[in-house]
Image 1: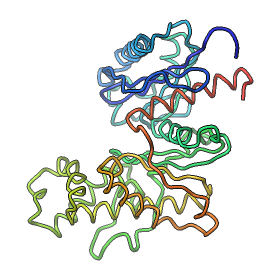
Image 2 (image 1 turned 90 degrees about the vertical axis):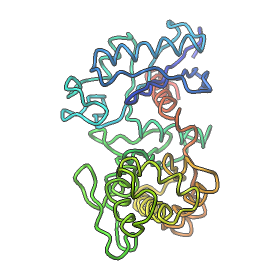
Image 3 (image 1 turned 90 degrees about the horizontal axis):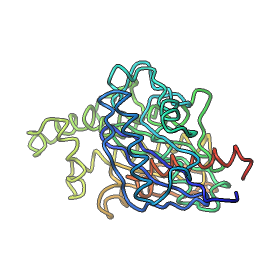
Length: 344
């Protein structure tokens, strides 16, 4: 690439905030901190697209980059959505407003900004950033699987430095992979169910929703005098991590089951993909260092690998998780821009 510097903007669209970043053509991020603005998704598409444009203009002002120097935009949102950025016709948690049903958010932003927009779901964007941040110049020669523990369980699969999308754009929905429950559940513990309608999938255990819906109610019955017994389940689920950091037995049982679930999920992934790295973000790994190291080590212990795989595989954290979505969206857009111009 020659001539004037070219830049890419990454926009991470969330339920309440947009986070944004700027990436130059060499792959260097100009923004080192969170740049947040209200997302207004609850007000419907028109307000939210205007808010995305406002975030776009604001981050350029912070970075000192002229709008005319931007050649592409990366956008990520929570799903479900197609690979092209058409939101589910049934709506979703973030896009509950009726105007979002079947809405083409990628095209709407593209028309508003007058720039090409590359769309990713938020799990894929974070996975792509983790891959590139960890492997650097070797990213195009490596593969990885990432899981992001939040309200649900997001994730992504990267091969050769690029996200695997699948025919309908729904590859990497790791949260809804069925996992064995024998040895994970204790005697008398019911088979967990997921908000998606599945039973015994990874998200039914390894997610905030899984804690609230399945794990916390069971373990409170085993520890009826626990302080969380007096809290509503939704509030209690959010407090479990702080109890885990303090070594609370109930909380440790919950996170032990989550770690086993992720290990079994990675075991399934390893037999399909045999990746170089397994990344975990959110949940317990956003806690105190000793606690997250315990959790990540437990995930690794329950990931069944062959000796050859164990020697070459890495288990690591998703870095800069709050910024990973925007950064991954920007990386995806830069990759599309380079591909369009025939640049490796």
